[in-house]
Image 1 (spheres, rainbow over the protein chains, first blue to last red):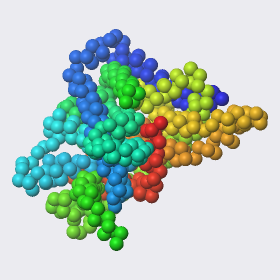
Image 2: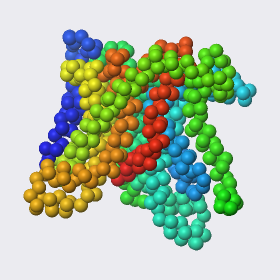
Image 3: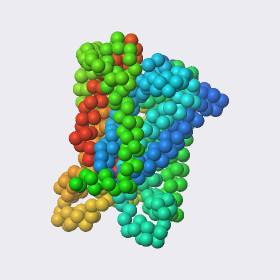
Image 4: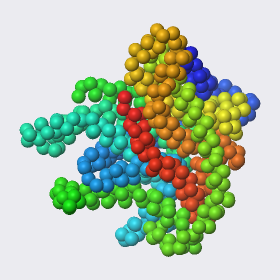
Length: 282
Length: 277
């Protein structure tokens, strides 16, 4: 029966484990990505990596993309779920509309956002002008571009956490709230002492799902800034892409890739652990 | 009568402005996209003002020069191929992982979950050179195998959760009746997997259909461009005709939006299944 997972294991061996090991080897070379010859350069790529400001920026940005959108998606997602959990007309239409962007390719969503954030004729600048303000070149500043793309990513995928929370809310027995109301406990306290603790499994799932998505952010950056201005809005993923295909520095790209692989693995495991423990405590 | 009563409930009145703001925020991208796509390049009004005359030439331009229909066919081929393998290979792998909890199997399961977390671009350089060696670049099977590999964890996760909830007594009964594991799987387990298969197909299907990062490397020939690749190349070459580019983007999202509107229930159920154990 164990033979059943042979095809899957084979695929992982060929396309994950082998490339990982080979990446480790390539990261010790100065390979340019296509030529037959290359030299071993020892740990040079790693030394360079830890002193390279662009890598530092990309690492920081990756954390902002990951944790920033996770925070936004969960706070907003929970708020939207609580809002839609009430009974009123049009709630299913709202749910559809909020979930719809999840279907759209992030790359295409990025291009649509171009119509909002471009300097000339951008839909946001039109509003700014109508309100009497000055036009802003939104993507000209790195930190601002990072913030905008974090928000865009969060809003595009907030539907995911919303439906997870909606499912979680529907699993909480109504009688807890009835009992609390009878004891004269207010809505805010009900949220704090009934809803949130009982939602813990849903919160854990939503956080992990969002974090995984956010730390991998690639498409939307490619569509909106390609990592610019300069290197200011790169994530680790886009930086690897740029170092490999743009600068033809495959050895260095492998080193950046491996370090980000390990970092994200560690962060992901720690966050999952933290929430699993939290669930038991509450 | 009924309506009047509902409106009369005081607790719901505050919901109307909130709902309006939500609608506005989430529909704005679609509104602007429509507004740009149907606009003549000569129309210099704000995108917020919907064009009074619908300029359909943008769409013919997108279809002829942007090759949007060809890219849809390409996306369809690789999505169908990949999803087929993702379900079959995933369900097969999940069966032993859910049934025999040996240490080896637990280790494999942990590894599979780890793959889900990692950004695939971190092993990009060597992944690409592996594919070059296998002559899988610019081949449907090349991109399909890579998509399958990176979507398998989700598929295995969903299937093994589902199979764990099927009573093991069924397998035992089958084996007492003389069924080997292969027959047990195909006769007893497989027929019960319909609902979870719907979730797997939908979730991984959307990922494959929308994939950009893998296709960007594997499918370099213009003939093989998928929808995201076609849109990316069309946007980069038509800065002069942004309206046709918008039309292309609109055509590109149309199929998945339509499918979603009809099968919404399954999409949302699939998402919930994948997140809550």
